[in-house]
Length: 204
Image (cartoon, rainbow, N blue to C red):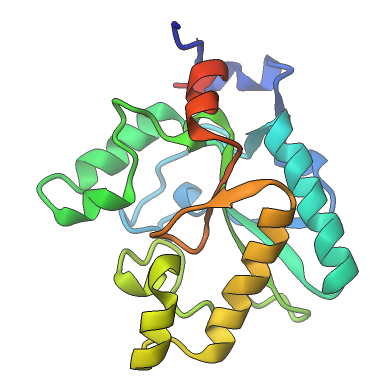
């Protein structure tokens, strides 16, 4: 099947995508639109990357509703949403020759972010502060791995509260249909990756 593609500049006119501003109850701080990421520079401007596929946007609304019922004083913070394929290539190139490429989807295969079907997220407390997850966003180390949390906890590399905070995030996301990955506590896919790559529009 031929992958459908769309230039980033055309996303605002495509009905399959929704702007993050149309989702109530969230906060947005796109880290790749600032220097606050592992590359250390703004990778998005002048593009507006505050978009998600409508299916993922609807799932985020379910996360918001869940949080409102369980932790009404907490807010979901979107750290990354639609990531154009051209930016994924820049991230891949930035880690050339390192073992850290394991944290990225090879652009040949394509990131689910480039379909607007993945998000990087965390949770803000009642004072607007990010919950302590043990590492920051884009911390490319074993302490970021959900799969290693029990080991990290036993070694003292993570605290019980940090693991509890991560579990709160997972509970919110999983309940809305998102799927996590083993290496980043902040990353969640909306649905099956194979199905997304086969049937959704990839943004270039």
